[in-house]
Length: 315
Ligand SMILES: NC(=O)c1ccc[n+]([C@@H]2O[C@H](COP(=O)([O-])OP(=O)(O)OC[C@H]3O[C@@H](n4cnc5c(N)ncnc54)[C@H](O)[C@@H]3O)[C@@H](O)[C@H]2O)c1
Image 1 (cartoon, rainbow, N blue to C red):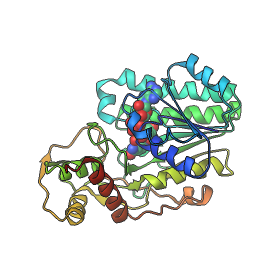
Image 2 (image 1 turned 120 degrees about the vertical axis):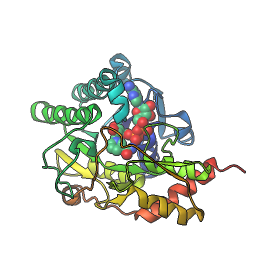
Image 3 (image 1 turned 90 degrees about the vertical axis):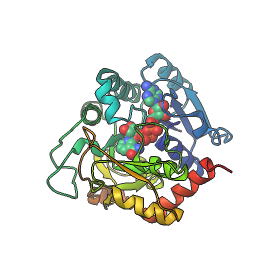
């Protein structure tokens, strides 16, 4: 049985759906702070899925869950996922992301968990002189959110070195796809662009739009999560991205093509903590995890737009 923390969120709900399709039993926990019950309402019908509302800071409840269920693996995705929030509430974001991860690692130690997958982030790199970015490049965090991801990785390494808990940390780059919440102010740019485009609202670009990101479709992330559970390595830190980069401004052009209409764009000042360019070198994930991104950006954007149209278009 696989336990997913943050199951009601964007990546968590997609990962749960993917694992259920592959025949695994999944138990999901979430405190429903940014995630929603709606994201998992279709999964509840499966007899292989169980949802428990639980905060990862609530050790007592976590222990109850692990006592009651035969859990082999943990995919730890629950966190406060926001650079801006981490500047506004540094102590809260650090508590949830760091202490929350520590609770999960402690549980893994006590209950003999075979492996823990820890969600980290490309934010740990900040701005880099060289692209694409390899895992051994110097870390250069530009936000408290990024620091929390580095600390999560270090804790995982110590839990592996000292207690032999197998941990695979995945540095996801910019993930996009269905079930990404466009109304969360901190959510990814693609969901916001598509949502606003459908509603004929103005698309907001921070800076000149020439900044680049490595966008990866959520199905590829779900596959990376499963491959990490199965790989032969006992510890590792891996970039999970497409290996390519796109300019923000070019997404607008692609969306205009997909939706067959001109979109309204407004340029705003750059945001603090935002990096200029980002692109993953995924050689290591290819080698150790046998990870290969499968969804081309144009196809992923089309699939995401179709999903948003089915959900949000006024009839
Ligand atoms: N989406 C991306 O582009 C991206 C990129 C890099 C890394 N990540 C990482 O992937 C993971 C999942 O991100 P996401 O995009 O699905 O975000 P999300 O906000 O959609 O999901 C996070 C989930 O965690 C839950 N949560 C928050 N605090 C909790 C707590 N104290 N107890 C229990 N549940 C709690 C939220 O309710 C939410 O459902 C995060 O660790 C994030 O740092 C995401």
